[in-house]
Length: 107
Image (cartoon, rainbow, N blue to C red; front, side):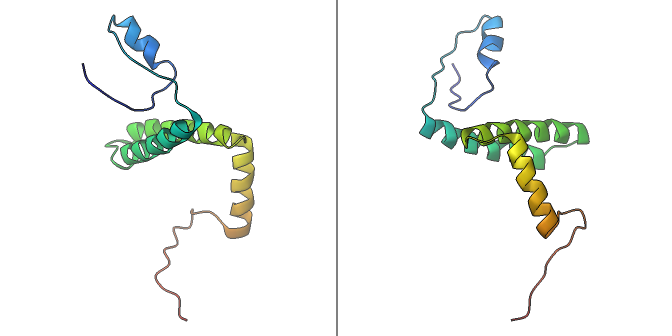
């Protein structure tokens, strides 16, 4: 039986059960939940960075967004609050649309 030891989406156990396979899960405590949620964010970001097509890249961005929703909730916030802060930062400091790459700053 393969061992995964990773955070999975809420409906994965039902999908496994539907195949007739046996599985083992556990509910994480807060400390482990945030640890594995952060780990999952790196996994999904890596999958986005290596996505071979635009369609697969969008899939991975959706996974990252799902993780951001969960992280916001864990921080006792919401995606709307995160978006508000993002907009405020964009107004003050700009976004990344102009593709500016800072090489150096003279002292």
